[in-house]
Length: 275
Length: 314
Image (cartoon, rainbow over all chains, first blue to last red; front, side, top):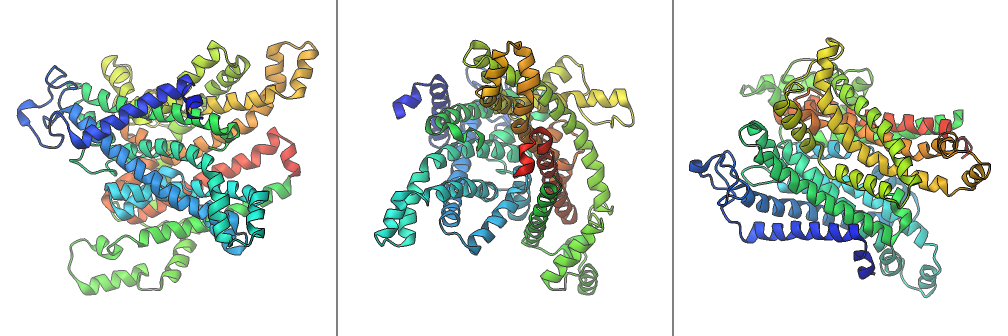
């Protein structure tokens, strides 16, 4: 399965781009050429050179180091968001899909209403409550994506519930909850993986958009969106400030999108219209 | 048709009610007291108590909710703390600005994407198809705020073609207004083209597999005739959904583009009000934007039967 997936050229390019992003994120935590946070006012707005590969910003901080550090922030926030929203969303979806009845219908009514919010708007509303911080962003984005996960998982579990092997488990006298967790949910894993990949991309984009607006990860921590926002004041003097973080976001997203498409086609061509 | 429409409209009501409850609850979870915020640093318990009872903050939450909803339904969204203006007036003004960039952007994107998507499907698995799909995924991977920034740097500063900062309403001064709109509209349109073109391609491929297309070919009709007379209408139905979703979410979510080009749209109003802790405006904007989103989706649903008469029956 895995080798077949990587035989697709798009999947290969996507995997390479994702790998670069992950390596950058690891370096961002472990080692950066310069300190990404501390100011160095003697080296303000230095153009890219052998010493500073991508130049320095208005505080004299090395852009390459901040880019690496920003990668770890973005990856951490996006990964946590996917983890939280998939864990909660899959549970809600599995429960409401497996157990019919009025509590399920009530929960789904609520889930559908949450889906009525445009996602960035909902995230902004939640940030207004919890404040701008990485935790705030993770909570906001998770709440935004949980309904989507719940819907997809529920649809899958609804159809799995009628399968004979699920029925068989029930006939054998297994508890309903056991049957659901042991037999129905594991068979909904493929669509969950496809969705989780898409979610990672959405979260990455949303995190940088929120940071760009000043409502994401607060300074002085580096975030790609925040770096782009700061670059706006220096577009004429220091255009490199706007190029590097924008390319970093775009290439990471391109990697996730390419890989996600290939994954989706591999697992289930019919998911095309769903996600 | 009428029962279909009535059912759709009725289904939107509980959704909007829960949305309203969610917005109300969200804003009440914020630490701090709106009355204290409105008073500012004035330290007077009597004034605070008076304002609290004026605003109804001393009533039970459920009562407060119904009072609020009652006022909203009459078009009273309250008054901005920061600007002392009616919230509705601010919402409508900034929404018109947002619509003036989003609607042209989505129209341009649809006009570009549908023919390109159909072309890619017709040439499925050729170089034309691969090229178009690569372009699409590249554009949909570029954040709109970065594309906007690149446009600003290149077309605005380097080539000096368009004004870089500010906004002039095209309704007041058409020529100048348009010059402010070109860059934001184009940057939004290009990215959305990437989204819509993929849907248009996928739905055209599905249609091309159907027997009536084979039949049309067997009759000896030319490919352009098949595309325009036979395939287009069936391709449009699913693509139309994506266009509607895009339009709906951009009407509230063009906030990053508005920020790049300093356009006073409704998304910008929401973000500025979050910063200023102007909660009546935050609450109003969240509700207004979501209602627009639900409304646009409802209109899309209602328009399905125009494309596909089969929907009427189900």
